[in-house]
Length: 465
Image (cartoon, rainbow, N blue to C red; front, side):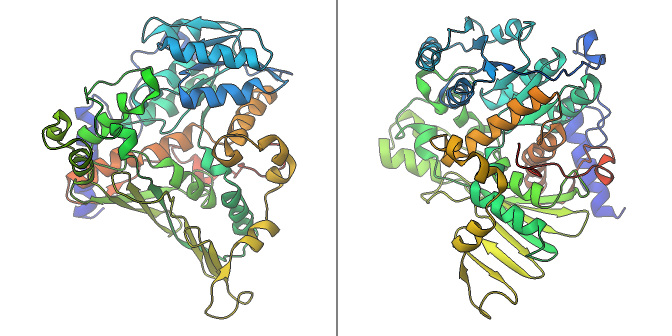
């Protein structure tokens, strides 16, 4: 270990200690607050129907609820939210689907704890503000139920280890509900990667590049209170999402990009992230948006934002690939995840909708990717295209919910698991550490504790889920 690596490791360990964690790199923190039952490995029983509960029934939660309610192999015994409007809309959704109303848990930020104690739930889908994700996922696993947690799954390295440690101690799966892994073009490219069309992979790019200024401030005029609430009162993410832009400087939403890239590179299943460094630009976009929309005298114009407008991270892997991940949500720009997959025999770039395969594409020329994407359309999309039609985010929401339900029915592990949730979410705290240290390289924890060397790829390897 050279001096630079030693200092980087010390910075991460020091930050972990300040959060009350011990050994954030090695995962030695114990779950002091966990109930005694967390040490028991629960039994997963195959079943004909999956009984699903929902924590958080705002806009995102209700899309999960709607898709699960359309299935004949599910039951929905209970839902939880503190927003009465969200509960009412959810109950109406169940009525529209020809289902009985669900039992409601509400009135407190901790009402979900009573819901997960029920004995008629096999799994719970969590669609709440980010700071609740880990504690709820941990609670669900400790209650002996499958946890389906929206992205990102964790905010700190300590929370990443909480997910892994709880999964290992209880035996209950935790699926990060990363829907972009199921995007149609992303899965076609996965087919091409697995068939070797790009050769040996070398370099990949991805990110979350999405103008969220109006989401964070609703035309600049909604008051910023700084609180982080469980419910989405008024269906506004600004109630909680803006807080992260005020108080954090890092890639605070990495999984839409890194999820597919992690699958391409077999991360945690034959490969792993080893190191990461990040830099951030100055913060200007949100302040300018507020002033432009609401004027210099508006109270929001006095809010100071820690989040740099564009955060760029570079990740190294065990097998020698490099990855660039970008976060850009405060700028006037069209939506793009910015995928680039490049190997020894060619590359694909989604923002251009182009690719080049050596020996098959015209020399030194781009090709339109559509014909290739159609040819290598993934078997899951071919099988379930009709059922995915009308599902959120171009159909990919169907597949992430389908995988969760089918895993429960089979009593099997989910195709995206707690190790993925931890590794993909860890980009956020590691980027914060690196930026605070002037871009210093941070060692990436091995959340599998060496199991990555023998674990086999499982994601979308057949046409069932």
